[in-house]
Length: 173
Image (tube, rainbow, N blue to C red; front, side):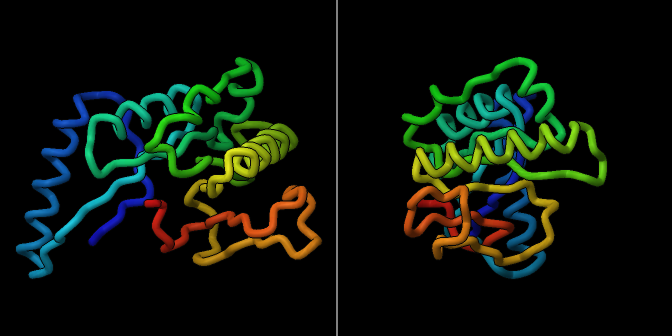
């Protein structure tokens, strides 16, 4: 089994066309590496409000696809200005995580204080929705989990909430 936990679908071409290319690549990899993949899952990451709705569209069209909904730190200022809303995605059965979220102080495309506010907002959302938080993949801790032990203030009484940073844990429920 293989689970691609991070890709973006920009809406160019249909999900079926995208999957034709993925399946072609998977067949080639099976031949090259002599390791066929029995089952393939995808998590389409939403990096903006519009991107989160596109990710939901993709997941709805592809059987083994799921999605996350969030705002990448590059788009935090635009999200704050536009007042975007992803709450309509909460009831979608293919929603598996809140994210892409995080801090990006390398490019600083959004002011750092705004990045921090938006990240905190989406961490709170992950808690309310009881979903894992999916930070942007540039974070550099391969298996980092924060668990409430009475010290992580954003968790507000949750006993077992995880924040995944490039985790190998499956988002499939």
